[in-house]
Length: 165
Image 1: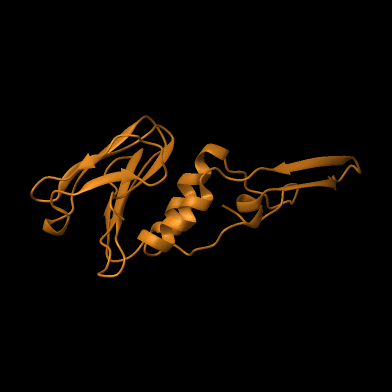
Image 2: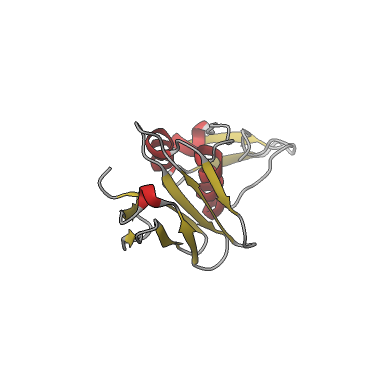
């Protein structure tokens, strides 16, 4: 995600469907630098002149779920990070949380529907999880060892959090 307005020479276009995935990595990973492009959060609409002098209308829509990803960072992106980057199109990472702040599991796919089976440990045994972004309606329950399979839709991201937080 580049902090550039359309029609600038250094513009690096990003497909709209991919922006929530990029923001999930930027905002929720331990080493992500939390930066948000203002028009992605609030939208923007303006007119600009091209090099040929013609006026062009530029509309930059709000990025779907960006406000929820920012809230997820505040509430759940805490603790040690574990990466599960073992597939070219579906990746996941977990944040362990702290005593004060719960963690999360993030699953992203730039292809088909995705799933990751993660062993989170005894602290997460027998917990019920929900997708904070609401992209998935089912709940996931970890077993006695804190292991479960977490899902995401095709070309999408899901941020799984413990249901009672």
